[in-house]
Image (tube, rainbow, N blue to C red; front, side):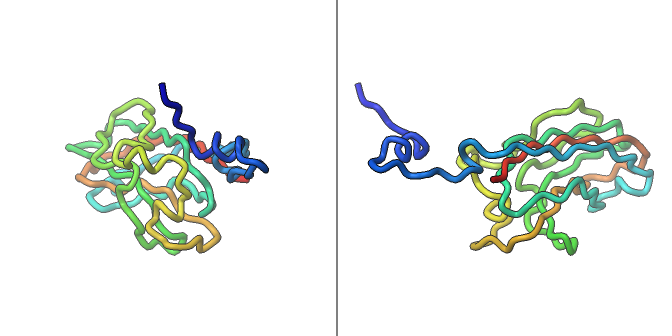
Length: 159
């Protein structure tokens, strides 16, 4: 029978032990949570709802989002924008999420499982950490057109 160690275990068993990044082991979990009242004109195709600013070096472990019925056949993507409002990856976390759904974790709905432990700047497609923050946002992928409530809960780890 073979044994395969994760990087965390290999670092612990090394002689001398190697410290793992705190975002991967024993880091501080932070929360960004809120509720947004989406106006009738804010749920049209390509409209953006900026949810929260998250540090670029953070590791997002869970991303819950839910909404009321926003009308029509409304769906939305969940992704990353710069704090200047420039899209980095509109649907890195989730694509075509249906409205009128209870809070659900969409962290890995579109993202591959091998992105677990990746920093936000890596998920944004950057080759180095630019520092600062990125916005996590919902971008409407199909027109809704009616008002409603959108809520989110983002768990992320930093050192």
